[in-house]
Length: 277
Image (cartoon, rainbow, N blue to C red; front, side):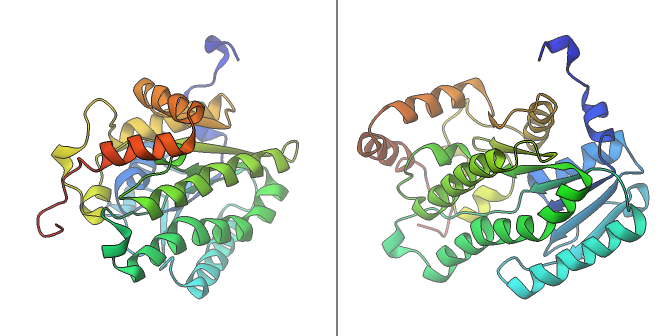
């Protein structure tokens, strides 16, 4: 699509009557809400997360549904609540689903909290699949799109963040496969792969922020704008930042055993946060 023919961010957002978002209480999810609400204040935004977004909801058409993504029963009831809202408040029009919730950990797997590692799989993989599966019939009936937030960690094994990287590899490949299955259905799927982003992710993962390699990171607002521009261009995959695109290409060309060894040397230099050593 020629650059001049691409719709603006405003036109992209106005193409949807409602947005369903996971993990909107902070970071990238919160930035999605702020930008979309600013461009289209009347847009119905339904957020699924444990905590409510720290925003003045009177200025937004924002609905928060509490949900612990480690609990399948809460996902089921949360999605049912959102479907009721959609049918009641915005019964027509295209729906945008943004699967953003996720977290990781840093350190050797042998020394990790096993419950926390299993929680990463529950939130990053199982919850994403379940939320999508429960909402997809509505998206197909009304038309819409799905944005899945993966990571540049999806392109190679990630020693010292083994579970997180593998979970994001699932998100990337599952998204691309789903995109092909839904081709021609009226539902577009986009996988977004940010590099290190200035959110609370590093703190929760136990990483010291100033030890992350420079030049590969972004702000949450950067990721949101890149995502929406890629959606406007109907891309199936976007890697945020030219340096990250080079790394992703490099990682795809070399044998996985080599890349795992290189990644171990790089990630192994990252310093754990105080109290996480």
